[in-house]
Image (cartoon, rainbow, N blue to C red; front, side, top):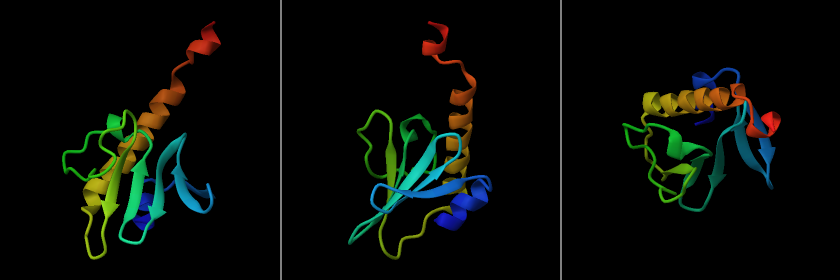
Length: 106
């Protein structure tokens, strides 16, 4: 998954935060990765705002902002659909950065 994220956005920054959680960012958080006993979870910080025609999001669907992809051992993820989500997240982060904040206008 790390390779797919880098292929989708060569300018992505990967950092380790919050007790060893990988966080991929580009002008804001794209997604985080967590590993559990039975699943690897990739949580997109602004996933609720992304179009997901391939229906990769299968966890954390009730939140107002984030959405997650739970990957169980042996499962394959549609690489092109996943990269499309990463690219959308980058575009969304970039578009929100370019707008002046309401606080700046006060």
